[in-house]
Image (cartoon, rainbow, N blue to C red; front, side, top):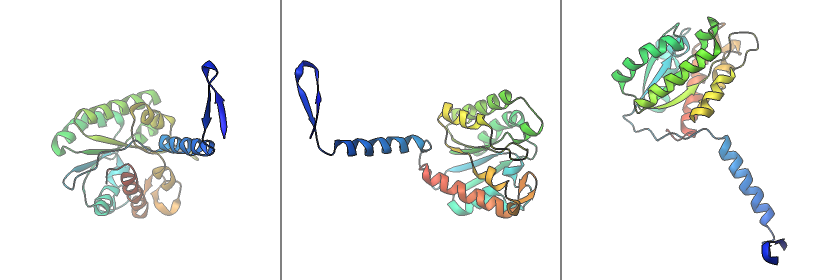
Length: 216
């Protein structure tokens, strides 16, 4: 049995397996820190809005193969496709209030930033616009899942501002799926868009992500 000195000359005895229990507790706390922030469970009538650009719209595939349509089929929830090709974080800010007012979603899947990068907008401006988009969505009473997109260049990963925003605003972040899909030629219709198979991968991963965060 281990002992530890305390003030006043007393000694406290630890159980023989306290080191093992402490290690288990440490592992549990570390794994909890790695988990995405949780989401309230969606009711069957709750609306999900997928808000973004051409990757949300489904450019490169049919409307039925866009990831919001596939996600709706996988989850049994209403998923509105509010993706507009060419949309930037700036133009997204302009049209977001009308979308929120029309559909009154419980959850918004936010996937923007790719066109900002294509147009070489300052990264700080893109990050600030995304922050304002999140705050606008939350002010409406909806929850947010942030979906990052890769930089449009060879071997480009996802910019740091997505993970920074997720940490600052306590957001669930799906950081990898578009990065992985758009690096696989079998899942692409052109250099910057997925095909039907690619959008299905995105929808399947998002459905799994929503289950992990407690929304489904």
